Image 1 (cartoon, rainbow, N blue to C red):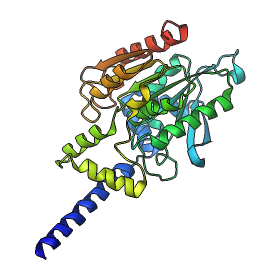
Image 2: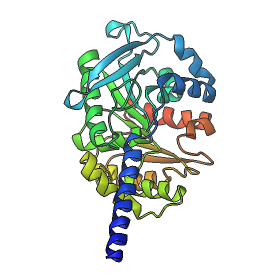
Image 3: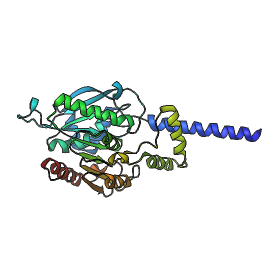
Image 4: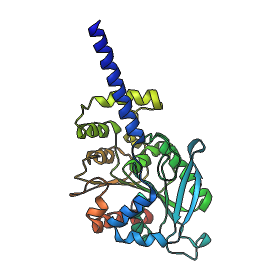
Length: 308
């Protein structure tokens, strides 16, 4: 009887721990747009000028009617384009716990390239209604809605690209299974497979890595999706969209091996750049000059047809 009680107590403890880990993963802390803006200003002095820049805020109907908050920052005006805007648009997809302002550090570079930049909050982030993070499952479907909205809002003749970091980068790659109508993707520090990232997180918490599977079981029961099913790399096997992978080689949160694997997996044009000494989502801060050269060369290469 004692052993039975011990076994029962152990099981209750383990499943409670699994539930806690699952809830923490999908509903961890979130930063406000104001907090993120101030943080970004500290990383790139150009960002402060975006506070007073021309911009248009609007809402987008995401997957299953979920409301997404978005902002469009126009590039310098082009008198030949509809409404005075450049015909080039870029959707920028932010990382986990952040919000649309997390992408501001990349924006000056793309505006110099003539792109109108659209940033939006992932579901459950920023100004959006609270919702569990599904690590690309619903987020990729939301991204497809943002793409559709952009063509509907600004015209079918626009030239559209994607960029994102971390969860945003994984979301872009996951969305490839739906064959988005975009010209290129810049992918910064995304994950190929969520399970190794979660294992590294548990290791950092000094917990056994096998707990990820208990958390996964709890996630299936509570939230009806699995961590094991979050494998963006599986969306690359028939991809034809040019991708520029960028990753810091000192990234310990999402190791650069993820981008190395995805670079090898995609069927389309691909290039990989590992930034020496850069930690997670810090490549542009670590070497801004080289980062801009990489992006400039890739984007202009796609625009001119040199890269297909």
